[in-house]
Amino acid sequence: MKNYDVIVIGAGPGGYVAAIRCAQLGLSTACVESWSKKSGKPALGGTCLNVGCIPSKALLESSHHFSHLKNDAVDHGINVSGASMNVIKMIARKDKIVQMLTQGIAGLFRKNNIELLHGRGRITSRDETGQYHVEVLPASVEGGEILTASAKHIIIATGSVPSNIPPAKVDNDRIVDSTGALAFTETPRKLCVIGAGVIGLELGSVWSRLGSEVIILEALESFLEPVDNQLSDEAYKILTKQGLDIRLGAKVTGTGSNNQEVTVIYEDAKGKKQISVDKLIVAVGRSPNTEGLDAEACGLELDEKGFIEVDEQCQTRLPNVYAIGDVVRGSMLAHKASEEGVAVAERIVGQPGHMNYQIIPWVIYTWPEIAWVGLTEEELQNTGIDYKVGTYPFAANSRARTMGDSAGLVKILADSQSDRILGIHILGPNASELISEAVLAMEFDASSEDIARTIHAHPSLSEAIHEAALSVDNRAIHI
Image (tube, rainbow, N blue to C red; front, side, top):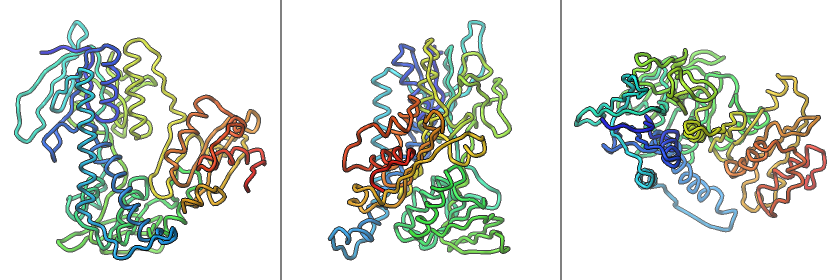
């Protein structure tokens, strides 16, 4: 049995980053990752890289180019006729990107002398010296021998899996989860998506751009509940205008499928309804992945939703055992998992391990993109905090106009007394990139005046943030 300083269970964006940071800090490190059913190789990068963030963004990018070519190129004087999408080639491009990035992580492991243990890991015991014993069960279809290893410190980063609902059982044929929706070999004529959250809107956008008639059923009466209402209302108008048929207050009660179509039964305020579609995507969120950990047997505590209980330092109830990412409380975001991984690695060697949960950015990669950090106006109203607001539309931004992408706005919320920024919300082109300025400003407790006094390049989309900051004090220049 080989001994390490740290064993990381899971090689997703939390686990592999934690392993690399541990190795950088001089800790002998091993990382346990199960085999990919598709490739028969370790699934380095986890859900995010293999069947989540990266492949979905590849398809969003391809479909965005296609949609722009068909609908907007003529405005630039570009005449195109007969444009078509080769879905199989688009999927192959996505797979190639995933493969290249996966190989990149393998290269980083080699560079940092991290040992990759193939299989599914679980803690079996702790000996009198404080070493945890980890059993690595073979996860390939061919089987294999059981490996054992030990370490003083364990970091659990097993991520999450798509959630299911009883009325729509995934069969990976006609009814698929988010993973299956990334591998269609042709564009469905008619597509239904259950869930109007981040995953549902992004996947719905991909196939709508390619010609699908897309119906999105959302059980909640409100649209994008976590998003500031001003932005979510505007996003609803834009996305429905693009062709997404978003039906709120629509609760799915049953489904049926055959070789030709899927029947979806749902209820809304007007009663029971039924639609028939070619494919159904179930995108109702994700659940923590603790399968195979034998969590309770080894002493880990799970909450009522199945998340591993941890304190503010990501420490479980077991000494020197940490858990990070989707398998613990908080947002299910890759960058949150990665930063927790870095913080835990640094805490192991006695460093502070900074992690500010109040300013984790969120992004929805529709077009226009939606990004935000901090509090919404509704949250401020509910907490009674006295605030002031500045907004600026991209329609008044010269760069957005030249791009032909002028929908949306920037909204800044600041404390009425101190002017400290409390939240920044962006609906517009490249919002995923623009939000980083907002995060940096809030990390250093900036005021709206700080952004207003910062020179922004012209012409640029970032000027919309500058103007919104000026608007907080009612002195925006270009509106």
